[in-house]
Length: 222
Image (cartoon, rainbow, N blue to C red; front, side, top):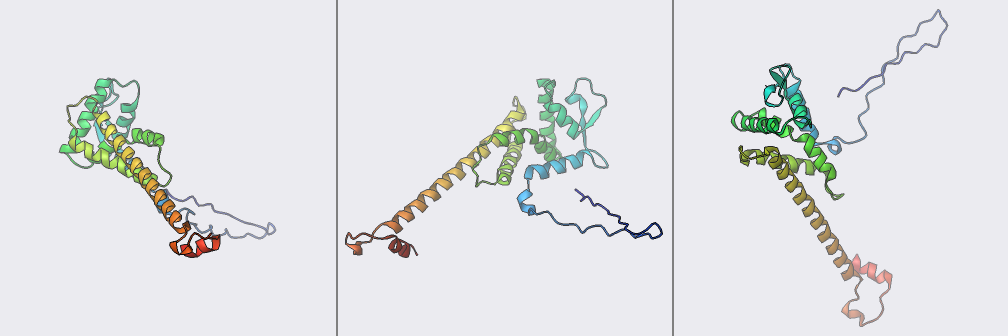
């Protein structure tokens, strides 16, 4: 997104004197590093919208997703919006998803991007409800969900009922496995740290049962 630049014009002399405009202030980079703002879902969404609103928008047969479309073909983002609308009949959703998956498999890109991007709204809601450990980066979870959807597109049965649910379920299983593994790893690291602390604080055999003060414990730890 282009940075917004504010131009300032100053004038502090009598009416017979005209001052020149001051130079615009230099652009200052964001205080947040770019890596911390990275979002795989956001990057995919940008690529998807670029396809839908480019010089030659990528379109899709509107009759597959709408009973009475106002034109023969819609941009893919409008198809996605209508696909998620409660008024869209289940039969229309079925045939739309089936055609999207077919195009992704048989025609390749950019339909692979479109097929995965069709799941983004649901994935956002899914990840918002996920009990994600604090040390697990959101970008890592998003990437795992997208990878699961991509793999499911290659293996899902095109004739399956509720094809979209197969894709969503694959993503849901993947992110829950990732979160579970992260919690297990954190628990193991905590247990190991506690065990090391116990070893440091335990008296050695050379002490012959004599009490050990705090300074001695710290010295052994070092």
